[in-house]
Length: 97
Image (tube, rainbow, N blue to C red; front, side, top):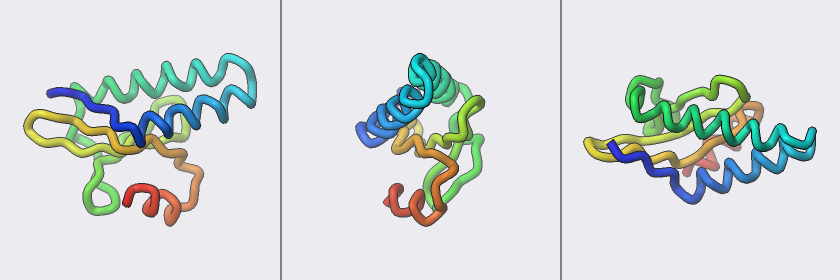
């Protein structure tokens, strides 16, 4: 399967990087490394996660309070969003529309 990280998800990763980098220098880079590792793991585990908001699989990050929202078909894994789980569920739902 081909793994595609859509622009919306890349923007989420950049925002997360800046948030953590403002907390302490270097944490933003650790955040990106951890989340990209979680995303790459989808090649082996895609489709095994619970479905949320009626159409997205949700994989929780191992080290950060973030969720990776994705969809699959026979050939592709498309990552649509990488969102902070501490946000209000309504905000998350609206972001995924």
